[in-house]
Structures are given as structure tokens and as C-alpha cells.
Image (cartoon, rainbow, N blue to C red; front, top):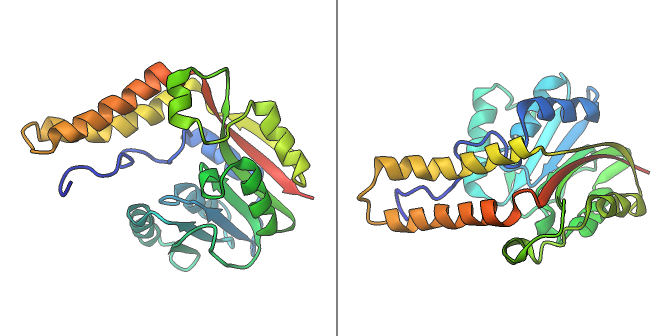
Length: 242
């Protein structure tokens, strides 16, 4: 596709089921102090990182992601919000990115980069200062998934929520806070993902690639409504590195 919408994230604030109110609650729970460094691995367009830096004067941030569209969007936001002296966004493989150990690390929806949540917890621990804080966002099964949901997420390594917490405790962390995405947050996230393409289809009904775009949206909606809606949860764990 050339001028068709390649990215379904244009209408999303965050690339995760997350409301504004919950985002600020998570940022407050991280308690970054002036002079500290926040590193967001798999930052997308870095909206949560930018809000965290804005929230606490004197904090600096680094975001890294391999999606060039997301990094370009994030860099434009860094510039427009006057944060160029405090936030750096890198287009890179998060698993190979090298920087100073963070006071606060963030990994939301990025566990696939390391393989699963357990591997991500290990990788983040190595990238955190002793006593540092990790905000981990990852999926878990609210209930036994059906065949369609397993077909979509079968190799993601999701577990029930208590098992995800146990992985963190066994990996050298203590749990400071736990919250999960509500069904309203999920529905808003999925609806916005679809709406960016649906709006394009309304404006371009005769485009030669309209059928392809329509198929992408229809498949996604089918997987969401008949597959993982109500089965796949998303947890935000605020963790202290022991």
C-alpha cells in the first residue's frame, strides 16, 4: 500500500489499553526523582515516557523502538512539546540497545522482543540500577481462551495473572502496585485501532487497495470480538528490583 493506511495507531494515545487517568496513576507510582533516567524499551511513539518526563522536572528519558513510523511520530511530539533537551528517541532493536542502567525502566507490550515475560523481566533487571523501578505491561489470560484467541496469541506465552506476578517475584523483584486494563479501556483501544482504517475507507471507497484494508479491519474485529475480548487481560506491574 502506498497512500493506504499502513498503521492502525494513528488515533491511539497509547499502544496499549490504557486511559489517561490510569496513565497518570502509573506515572505517579513510579516516583521518578530529579536527575534520574527513565528508559522505555519498546516505547512506540513514547507518549507515556513524554508524560512521565513532563510530570517531574529534572528527569530525563530515553525511548527505543524498532518501528520507524512510531519513532518519527514520537520525535515530532518531543519537538512540539519542548522536550528535546530531556528526551531522546532511538530507532533500534530493543534487545541490542545499549545505554546506562536506568533508575526507572518501562516495558509495555514489548515482551515479544525478548520472547516472553520471564525473559523480559530478566533483561530489564540487567538494565536497571539496584533498587530501581520497572513498569511492566503484559498480557495475561483472564479465562481459558477459545481456539480463535489461541490462534492469534498462541505463541505469546501468556499465563494467568497470579503466575505473571510469581514470575516477577522469582525474577528478583517485589511488587509495588498492580492494576489491569478494564474492558472499557480494551474496547476503546480496539475501536480506535479499527477506526483509523475505517475512516480511510469512508474517504476512499474506490481505492484499488480498499478491499485489502477492509479485510485487515474485518479480520482484526473478528479476532477481537469472537476471540480474545474478555479472555485476554493486560496487567501493569510496578516492580522494585531487589
